[in-house]
Amino acid sequence: MEKIKVTAPASVANVACGYDIFGFALDLPSDELVLQKRNDSKLVIHDIKGAQLPTEPDQNVATVAIAALLNHLGSEQGFNLAIEKMIKPGSGLGSSASAAAAAVVAANVLMGSPLSKEDLVQFAMAGEIVASKKPHADNVSPSILGGFTVVRSVEPLDVFKIHHPKDLEVLIIFPDVEIKTAEARKLIGNQIPLDNARTQWGNVAGLVAGMINEDWNLISNSLQDVVAEPVRKYLIPGYDQVKEIVMAHDAIGFNISGSGPCMFAFFKGSGLASSAIPGIQKVYDQLSVKTFFHTSKINTEGTIVI
Amino acid sequence: MEKIKVTAPASVANVACGYDIFGFALDLPSDELVLQKRNDSKLVIHDIKGAQLPTEPDQNVATVAIAALLNHLGSEQGFNLAIEKMIKPGSGLGSSASAAAAAVVAANVLMGSPLSKEDLVQFAMAGEIVASKKPHADNVSPSILGGFTVVRSVEPLDVFKIHHPKDLEVLIIFPDVEIKTAEARKLIGNQIPLDNARTQWGNVAGLVAGMINEDWNLISNSLQDVVAEPVRKYLIPGYDQVKEIVMAHDAIGFNISGSGPCMFAFFKGSGLASSAIPGIQKVYDQLSVKTFFHTSKINTEGTIVI
Image (cartoon, rainbow over all chains, first blue to last red; front, side, top):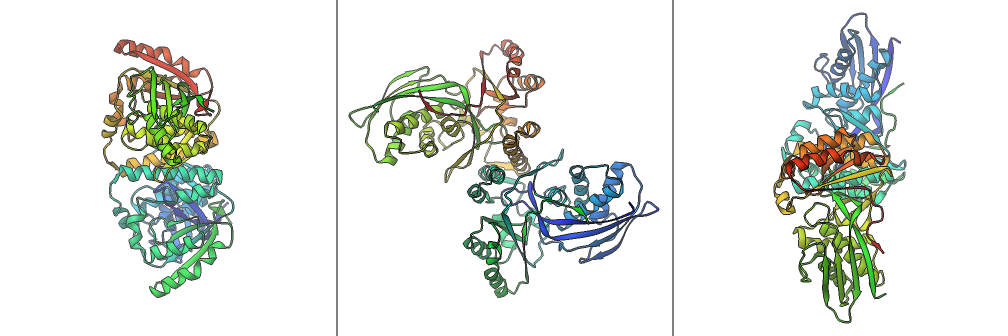
């Protein structure tokens, strides 16, 4: 095969209590990548639609990820890349992760599929370092593998999927303001109170058990964050109001998606998610902030060839 | 019913990564309590075998726990208590928790079983405050409920059991030196590095998913502790040597039980646990430390009437 088109989903990282370890994939939005073999060893991005991103191979997450994969394979194969971004950079939906995910999955297929999807996570992660400076797998894992994923460890990398209830519906709320991940990380500091850490790992245990056992009460009680939300929510206009509205519409839980500004809410069953939208729209109309909404199931496939 | 005899199992708290939140019950050792109604409102401990413990009703965990339960029920019923301790105080096997567990379960039955076992955890916890100053449910939960338990939250109290593999075998190693829980807690401090907290909650997620899905690799990889073990292990003579021996005997994992000095190891299947004992015995013979061993399954019943 010489040419391939893949699509990689947006993802929500952290998921309240699971700072840097939990993530899940969304049905929409998703990025598309067309990858084509070249006759030389160059990596050339000849087209990027939907966002302004660097095209230098050592500065774009997609080409850096492919270079890491090729290096591992001992290959000097070159590729042309055409990227269509549907996930806005800086939205908190794992935009750079989905580009890296698409890149490594596509390159792996064109190289004859030597590696499993699980193996590819580390190379997508290498690509994502360009965007976030530190290695993170909490967006690339769900973007590649689909589903609800846990990054148990980054070094050595250990990532796994857990079961989730099939009737879980997600509402994504995207107020169009920019938050730099690196700035958002600084707010948290390098030390945290032991009491907060303990609260967090109690909720982590609860969310994992709740998802696997489809215990909605436990999921709901566990969707709390005492580490990032208390400091980061101030970067997101209208945060407390939006939370109040979605919880009043019977959301199972609500929190920041990644480092924001996107927020997510979980609902049990279809149809409830959209009922919360008009009230939230009103909040952002009053704040004069442009806002987008997505309703989605948890995407179970991750990056796929189309 | 006027008189009842109950037995409450020892328990292992923390379980490597789950500081203050994980615990499981053991088949042996276990404490016994005979509780008998009185014609007045007094709580009288007329016999304690196996350990030197206070008999004043406001200083013994069993009577304090019963008093908390009676207060909740609005009852002035008095009781006589005879306690037989098989779990040595200060061993790290939840000795005070098992006494409190036995007390509330027995009193609840003699009061006509108005409360569920789950409801009783909070009153046992109230009793345990006498021993450990701060409210903890990570020993009383497994001691009452049996199985592998998670304390998601202490305030409000939220405790649940998770599935565990039936062929999991536990080795308890008890070098007979005393460690005060309060002293052991001080070693950890009030702040922890965010990196360590993240490592811990990654492993918490891994251990919960590993236990529920019977994924032995995941259980093994997740049985790590970067919070308590690195500082507390120095309180336990021979710790590193013992760990090396049990891991060389194909243990799935090893760590401190509660705040020590007891240690636990997990093995897959029966018979492996005892193979590690002679080597460990030799270590403690050289250190001139008296040592006891227990092999056990995870006890699934918790406190029971006998």
